[in-house]
Amino acid sequence: MKDISIEQAIKDEQINLKDIKSCPVQFVLAVNDALNVLTGKWKLPIIGALLFKSMRFSEMKKTIPKITSRMLSKELKELELNGVVKRVVDDTTPVTITYQLTDSGMSLNGVLDKILEWGLGHRNEFFSQA
Amino acid sequence: MKDISIEQAIKDEQINLKDIKSCPVQFVLAVNDALNVLTGKWKLPIIGALLFKSMRFSEMKKTIPKITSRMLSKELKELELNGVVKRVVDDTTPVTITYQLTDSGMSLNGVLDKILEWGLGHRNEFFSQA
DNA sequence: CAGTATCCTGTTCGATACTG
DNA sequence: CAGTATCGAACAGGATACTG
Image (tube, rainbow over all chains, first blue to last red; front, top):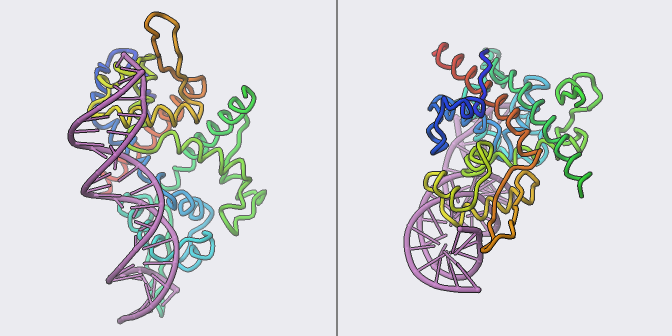
């Protein structure tokens, strides 16, 4: 993985920040992809559950407090479309459907860690200064 | 900064994932803080602009394409409340108001880089497998 | 310059009920 | 078991006009 920093690129004037959108399009798209799979009320709980282990629909419903079928179904579809979740149909009788993370999905772990780290540091600073 | 990993903690069974909410409350709150300042249509553009340099209201309006006064004002207030943006009133005549990032705000840089890195890797994998 | 106020639209999410 | 269908409330965000 290259050592790319948005803000470094901006400071190096590789990017002319007249307008934040003048970032290379791929950068914007890439960040958006990430934010898309992390945003909303249920995506994080779902990913968290699947990071723990692959699960079937009903197990996820039991695992994630208060989520409805509608929401779980909807979010899983989106996550699948975005390539972070795989829907695996096992040809048993009756068929068994399992949801699991793709490699990309698994690697969200690192992102989440970084986010958590920031959040904890931020809370420290925030509460100490008050 | 400690080397804390949500998912590692879960796997170590420090956390009993019957329910994702059984994560230490601080973890959930911390991650939420981070997501709150990154989510929505305008927060990222605003932070991006301020990472580049501190700016006044009107300059931000020119810098960020298509943002309205209403949204800029609203988002800046939220970011200030969340401790990532500082509103500085300079006692010139007339007064000059400048927005700048707090230390926490600045350190979002690292988070953004990690998010970008994931996004780029994800796109690679996603498009290569298709 | 640095915002507010008002009104309006589209999207997200919850509740509830239903299906092969 | 693994979802879908329908309805309605809440909220995010846009357009436009206005203010000290």
